[in-house]
Amino acid sequence: MTTTTITTQGLVLRTVPYKQNGRVITLFTEKLGTIGCMVYGITPKNTRLNTQTSPLALASYTLTQKKGSLFTLKEVCDPLIIPELRYRLPLLKTAATFGEAISRSQAEFNPAPLLFQLTKAYFTYLAKAKNPLTLAQSYKLKTMKHDGLCNFQLRCCKCRKNQMSHYYEGDSYCDPCHRRMFTTDSIQFSQEEWHQLYLLTYSRSLAQIDQFEMTPTLEEKIDLIYNQAYQLTH
Ligand SMILES: [Zn+2]
Image: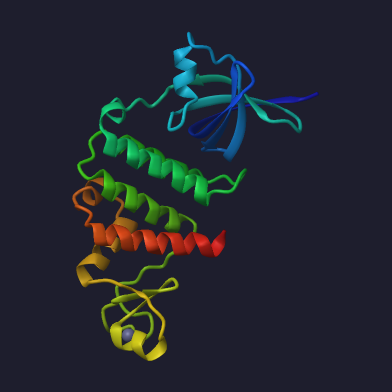
């Protein structure tokens, strides 16, 4: 039977124990997208393997696969170690948000190398993050952007003149247009909030994104938009 071997960077999303010394890990890989992988040889003494196959570990994984079966882990190297994750709880929460967002948005065997690179950049930046919550919300918006689920506009999509102030089912409307067209509730934004959301989605500079302190109101509105987007598709 043919066995294939592949080496790819990956981020561990979930683990489930398997028999005595094994576990099944869900890995978001650069080359293959999200996959399941068997890991053997997890013993109390083997702390390195234990750590590198635990949730939120990011490293280079060599995997083998016999045709038609699950991947098996052969080797792990070059782990990305962020010591701050161990003692700064807000950073750990943000890292967990990245993992949850991938689990929620990415189907199995659907390669998303750009999203992987983005995730790695956010992870690497965490060590010096001032506003981890802002990074978490920005990452969710960027996942939406990657998946083609947002097209945020600074101006109203109808009249193309006024500044937007209402977000409704994926589009941006000014107050008069929204009132004319809909009777149902929308998510309302102040101009400042919408400019911030726009920057968190489209800015390519993590340092620029990290300058913003997230207000609880904007955090909630981003969650509403994000949850709506993924409820519609999943
Ligand atoms: Zn308008």
